[in-house]
Amino acid sequence: MNEFNLEDIISLTKRRGFIFPGSDIYGGLSGTWDYGPLGVSLKRNVENLWWETFVESRTDMFGLDSSILMNSKVWKASGHLDTFIDPLIEDVKTKKRYRIDHILEDNNFDVSSLSIEQMEKIIIDNKIKSPEGNALGNPAKFNLMFKSSIGPIEDESSIVYLRPETAQGMFTNFRNILDSFYPDLPFGIAQIGKCFRNEISPRDFVFRSRELEIMEFEYFVDPDNWEDEFGKLLASQLDWYHNKLKLDNSKIKQIELSKENRAHYSSKTIDFEYQFPFGFKEIGGFAYRGDFDLKQHQKYSQKNFEYIDKKNNRRIIPHVLEPTFGLDRQVLALICNSYKEDKINGENRIYLDLPREFSPYLIAVSPLLKNKQELVLEAKKIFDILKSNFKNVTWDDNGNIGKRYRRQDEIGTPFCVTIDFETLNEGSVTVRDRNSTQQQRVNVDNLVQFFNNN
Image (cartoon, rainbow, N blue to C red; front, side, top):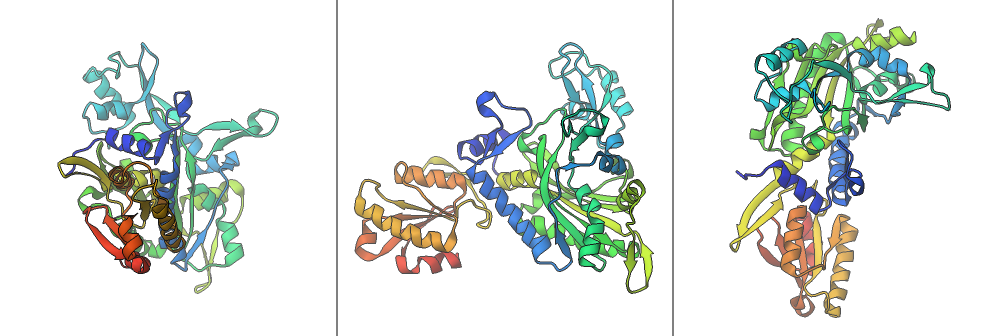
């Protein structure tokens, strides 16, 4: 097993253009990250496969892109104004604030089933200090939503919040989907979108940040059939982690949450965790939300959210199953899962063993020498052919061939194609495999077929 830490991942992702600190030239902004050219490609490849898997390949799903700003009544109805809170505690000397559960976790306490009062007692009984070694004050509750105002006048009526989740956009559009498409139960509404959470102490790179992206869908079912549908969706999520993302099975586990650890609206919740360098942490969840959300919005909006069962001619409020996938966390899991170190000819090598469907580039094309015009011209021709067939093909002539190979290994490019003098004489190129570093000669006329088959 590779021994690496989160700093190794952060260094690689910045060095190779995957992820940069937000506002870096001004000293950064805590809890924000910018995806560079390769990070955008990797993330988009995950998004596209997720959308294809859970939306396009199904006949019971409807896509949505709801607005980030929503009427404040949405968050009152959903309970976020009253319950979307984290417990914080303050360093009495520096006045810095921390999440109390993070303080306890850093001191090796299991906080998974503790109330705020119980966490406070542990702080007091064990005389736990802040990270700076100072005394801690009393815990308090902190609402995680970003608050703003809309329009030219700031008053109570102008208050809006950046959405902390994408789910409510799907619930508020439930009636619109019914009226426009007349779907039969069960059916789902899916979207991928940004969420914003004013985290007290963002940490662990992109795992816990203030701006995040979620892939999820709300699946509306007959209350009598929810358990059968739950089992089907659970199987599809396990297939996603094991066979689509291809995460190491030994590093994935699912945990059914106890009642005290579930959200207030949930009667059954399963968390999916991946073993990051900083431990097993959640990368997705699956909740049975019952009819809580639709009933709340029906109550607060005074709009009818009933579904007419066409077979039995009965009116029901559908129940909801909610699979949620943290996009940033799954990108991080994919990078960590792919991070490898070995030795080639006695030299240390780092490479990303990314599945080809996620790699930012499938192929890197290089002339052996960039100052030999005949090699460059031939390489450009081959590059154009491969680019037109595979799209995610890159040109690399920076540095000697050894440095190019190492760079493409760290990027996770599965294949490198080198055009040399033998290409000019015999019409074949060197194709190098990322993982094995083995090289073979392939005729130029057979290149497209070769990459289609490998």
